[in-house]
Amino acid sequence: MTTTRQQELADFLVTRRQRLQPDQVGLPTIGRRRTPGLRREEVATLAGISLTWYTWLEQGRDIHISDQVVASLASALKLTESETNHLYTLAGVAQPDTTAPFTEIINPMLQRTIDSWPLSGVIVIDRRWNFVAVNQLADVFATQVVGHPLVHENLLREMFTDDAFARVITNWPIVAHNMVGRFRQMYASQTDDQDLAAFVAALRHDSAIFSQLWTQHDIVPEAERGKTMIFPDTGKVHFDETNFIVGDNTDLHMYVFTPSLEDNTLDKIMGILNHTNPQQLQRFKASFRPLLEKLSN
Image (cartoon, rainbow, N blue to C red; front, side, top):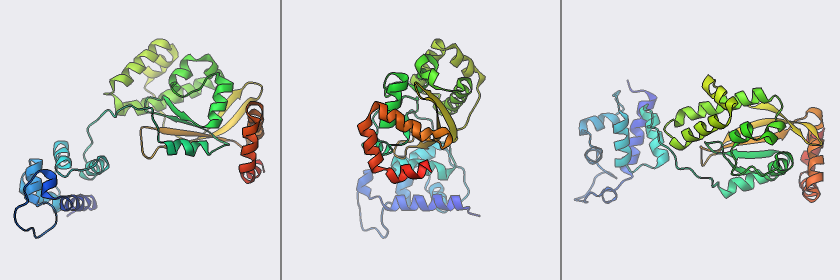
């Protein structure tokens, strides 16, 4: 009996085959074709598998398919990266590990988006936990509290080697443990990344605490949580921390720190902005007065 997944796989293969023309895959166009696209035997030949076996796939039969065959079919059918990932999922086959190219460039649309959130600090980190973007409020906080911009720095290295950064964090031992546990979970899918392995080795050399936590192999999942920071001349400031995967680059994680309703946090942030950039504060208040009033109630 054909399962839903097997039928999805069959239908996907048929539609991908029918959209291709012989000249797109280097085959001659000979004679009139009764159906659109490539013939089954042409796909089978291009993928290096038997016609019978490929026909069974398009019929939704319950047969085992290896990762090598999935890769061959993806190549034969000229699948995009997203389509290839979809094919692996439908085939029930784990995709071979690949090291994605490293880049610190983000989509300008993402930068405009995070800059439009005036009341929440936003940071974006890559798969190596480098800061690749911050919004204006996070930049103000970093300059005032840490003493330097965060972009091009590394979150873990800041946490474990920068005393100014560490002083901002309340419950530092707990936060440090959770942070390493989250990084360890991410690291498991990138063990072939030699640059990432070198980063871990260097940080273990530079921080005995990180090295100790790393050897524990504790895993901590991502979750929404409260986060308290200590700001100079302001004291404790409370945030609600949420996180998102960036849609067009799943190697990027966006963390949003929204003022908590606890302990007049919003008023404290307004005071920080008034001290560091009063003109920016006035623009924020004018543009977002209804939201400010709602959060203050």
